[in-house]
Length: 170
Image (cartoon, rainbow, N blue to C red; front, side, top):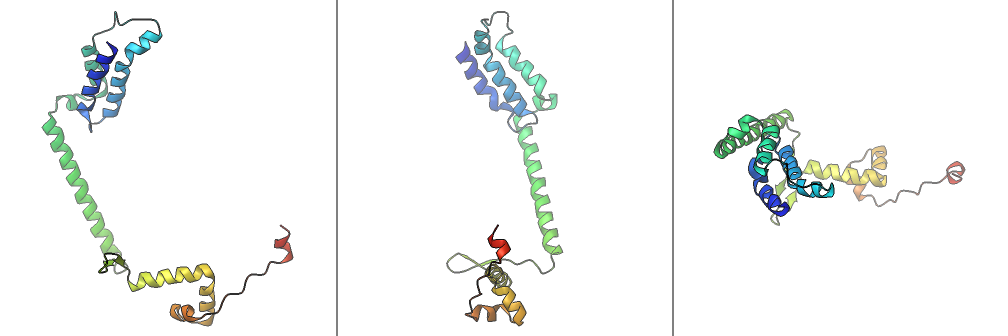
């Protein structure tokens, strides 16, 4: 009886997938499927227990709303399709409003002939600044009043920082 019960429950588990409280329903079905094993551990039998069909119906009535239970499969599908369409429209509206609010600061990537994205001049300059900041030459460039290109061309190596006696003893 335990294996048959598991097969039946496995077959009806996906019936309400995507509906509100469907996960609670599946968890309750799993508890129903495991009932024979649980009773066996306790030393009891299935005698006196309600039939499987009644347990399944009670599980559905307790965990799912009447609206969900009486809705056809087509109605559920149509509702989900409408919700998805609304979400897509909201995403499009948000992307349009965010791109218009940036007013010229949006930088798009093109593609080169190899298929790799091409970076705009603004992005390339920002990347170069980040590289220079990380190795200390950006500060030298700023102090000398030069641009990013002049800092790249300079072949000077930044001096190693000297440790003073207080930091060396820590």
